[in-house]
Length: 499
Image 1 (cartoon, rainbow, N blue to C red):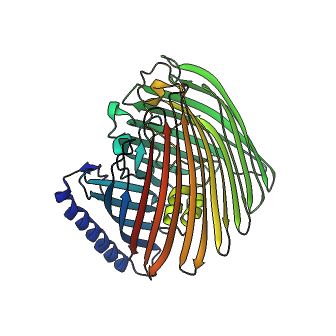
Image 2 (spheres, rainbow, N blue to C red):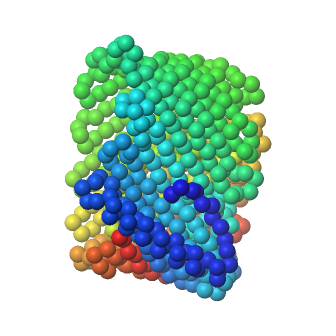
């Protein structure tokens, strides 16, 4: 994709041909690229198209129900390259919605998840880049939903990118160096410029050539975070780190430094920083990583545990740090997201995949401190599999001087908790039945700023051909709120093709 296309709304009559044209063009272009790439190349290109029909009894997600039928056309493109100078992956989809009764306006929505690295000069200069387009919830306190085609007043398209050139090498054969400059931005169409921010940073690290069991490094860095809805903050830091390889399975680390920042004050204040950590891998299937740091805003930490068994994988993470709004590839789970997403994508039922992979979030307007705990388990049996995720996030306002709008303007802390469980059973070699349940609770410091979203889904998925699949699902949604409670029931049918 050469452009990040914002969501736009057109009359139904003019949008239908646009969606069809986009689907055909994407499929044809992707097929041509795949043929030119050739089988021996390590570049994978997979275009796809699908049509989804949704019949719902509550289009606007309000207490007074209004039924409608929604047709969704989706054109998608997946690309990946794992060898050569350019490596990375791109997953893009253009979704078009048409409403049978005209009770909703026809809509185009984009989703994009892309990241890659280009080695411009071997072992010296490289460029990392990432980009994302998501349909983001604006407020955790407003009406929540599970389908982007319904109740769109509390949802907006958020676009973010980050590009980071870096230089690395060796000086006089004694020390290694790495210099990085990064620039990122995030934009949305929400009111009051919520979600709009720009981040610029630079760092220089030198480290001694590896001498077992000790190692050292020194880093200087500068970072500026500018929110359109509030003010810009800066952070200058310098630190020295030491590492010690106690055993082949255990590595210890410590750091000491100083930082100057105006994150919590009008003028920059200087503070001593320190930290320690450990990385323990007792076996190829088990890993525990723990890091603790003392910063100007208090303690930050990151704990990640993973254990893999032949059919079961356990993951647990806990973190506390400043939220970076313009890093599309940042891991909200504090773990290796590539591994976690690969496991989620392995779930055969697409409806179940969507439920298990749901994430928490809302739009920020100023520097935000976020604490998060995540636990997940995934079991893959011969015919039956299940996945479960528990997530607990606490977001609090970090900048006391910013004039904040949005959720953190109503409450200094926003707490979100999600339970998601899904089970899938293979009825035949090509057909499976899935059941999922999710419960999300959002709460502020006042009782009126709380709501609970509960969703049940039952789905049947079958392989309809060598490159085709079909899904029929039913869902029941209950939204408990003191202001706008609702219930919604829907039947959804999807037919998809991959080329």
